[in-house]
Length: 495
Image (tube, rainbow, N blue to C red; front, side):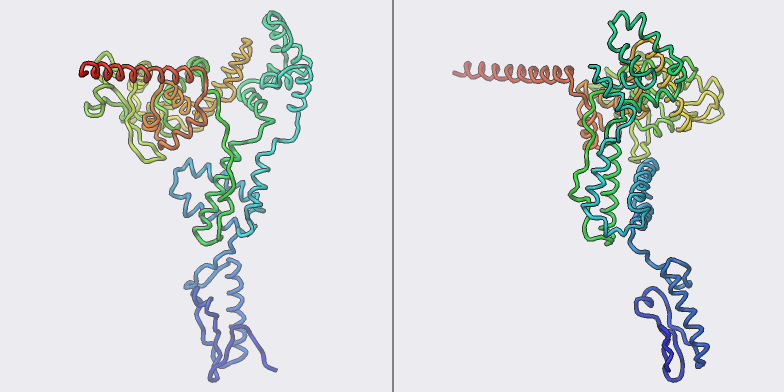
């Protein structure tokens, strides 16, 4: 009876292990096994075992390429990280990495074959992301408040959760004088509220404002990354078509708020009280020059310089020049765009920067060019985590102080603030002042298209903007009317 062993062949009395063409293409070589049948069988079985181990992703001979993995979502994500994300900025890699982790969990821990991810699955994912959370304590309290004729806004939900629904209803339905003299002080003295301070009170207020809302920003980010991943997979011939190509990705609705000046002042006041002068300056810089948090932290005294004559348009000099006749600015290498830009600084921001530089020199900081945003405790640049933590501490303290003073509106305005909002607020501030999009883009480092999108999403549509628009239109009409009158006069003279 003939013995048949896979890939074992006999030619002219000799035995050979003969791999298939696909294996040869991957580097597996034929091997002469001699004339002994028993020895040939033993060696052929060993080589076949090596092939099976290799197919499962295990070890391979030196000349053999690694076995391509089955095109699972995990495989696609690993390649996407290595071949596409590797060249992007660190912050972008971190953001995308977070969403890729969610996508991998969704795809059965990455085990789902990528070709099975079709448009239908993507739509189901989108719908799940946009579905409001299940009813929880905040929603139950909200229903009770609405039944009492009270809008279940962030303030009401927060009070109901921590002071009780009955106390919140009593507070919110009390006459104004009772609110100021009797009801508010009693509720704000409750032990449950006194125990909430620092970051805890900050997080509670944020939660109260977002509990019953779909996470539009998360849905937008995750679906955008999924679309990018699938585009990459299509380019690498893992799939024939991008299943996300025709899936509409939700955009966050336009916001009607920025960080008001009173909120920035309240946070800055807390920072000053704590002796965290670097935090106060970071707030002013974030708003004033509209750069990314990481770029601000990398600024050194060397970056602060007098702008050259050729860098300043003649019509701009008068508005930028200080009493000493100089125009000062900050050189910034934007880490994400890899572009250098010099942003002029004026007024109080210039004074504060120069005071920080003088303080660093007075402290005899060892570094040749010390950081502008200097941690007073170490004399070195703020680590990003520490800046964020202390900023949140200032926000929380300012919010709590406003609540204790009965200014719940300011307390709520402070509750949702994060440091990154300062950059966006500065952009919207210039937008409100009528600064053209391309000038704002030149300062912030965004592309013009991205700047327009930010202003579309975050730019307020308020009375001030409407008034400015009408005033601009009236101004243009006056210019046209004056020009037309001049032409009419010239025609009369000619007649």
